[in-house]
Image 1 (cartoon, helix red, strand yellow):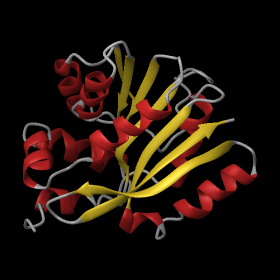
Image 2 (cartoon, one colour):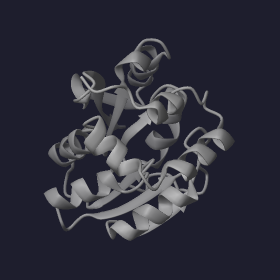
Image 3 (cartoon, helix red, strand yellow):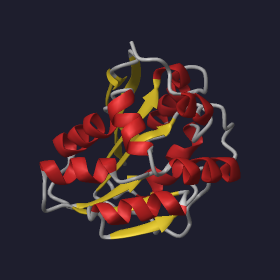
Length: 209
């Protein structure tokens, strides 16, 4: 097992503070991909992209929520080069890195802890979010805005780090959303997250009502 990356450990302690998160990722952007992909075996972008493609219908307009440096967008285009992908992220420097990837049609700054009123209801055929629902970042209430901007029947695919799943109330939140008729739970399964650290996530697939 690899030694735990100190930057990653710091990321998990940001307590959802948007200013601290923005500053932290602005300073990390240059080595972000190397630190995650090579050092800890970060596979969430791949597993989330694959899950979205499996459940995506005929629509081709997808939102990568919390796109970071564009890892999910690149994985999606490997699987379906005809997709149109928009991205949102809290950090301008991360958005600049995503822009360089060439994977996205449109990139905008947005705080997933808020209502994201800048995006219209029922906008996307599919939504994917990898690495965002984790300690110190976005909690379960962040799902509300994603559901609002998903078209009826659209898959919403996201990862939740295993240490966050029960501790921050994701289980009860998702169950309540289904009870309220807002989503249908398509599948939830344990999935690799950091392969070199033996860290796992819950890979969740919901369908917007």
